[in-house]
Length: 123
Image 1 (cartoon, rainbow, N blue to C red):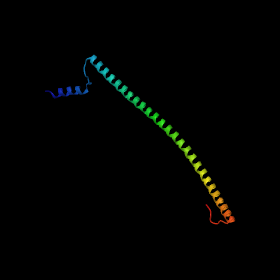
Image 2: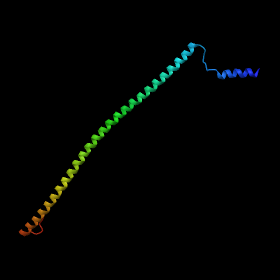
Image 3: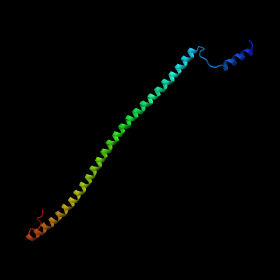
């Protein structure tokens, strides 16, 4: 074998374009299959992204509904707390008034008992 001839054939093989077939119909079918695969891939990716965004929208709607419910509960709790505070303040004033009145009534009773001669009979 001639080494120069071998070298030339190897060089031709390395420099040649990759060809699956010389048949034009087979090449067109391969191109069509490659394009169809890419289109299918893009459609599947788009479908997946759309499904993810749809589920995200559903989760977002659910969270917004929960947030609205919690805001209403918080508002109701604040109103109840304010009512309880005002009731507690009113009861504290009433207890103070009743204690003052009780002290005044005890003082009157002691005076009345002292005037009528019955010491030590207070209720």
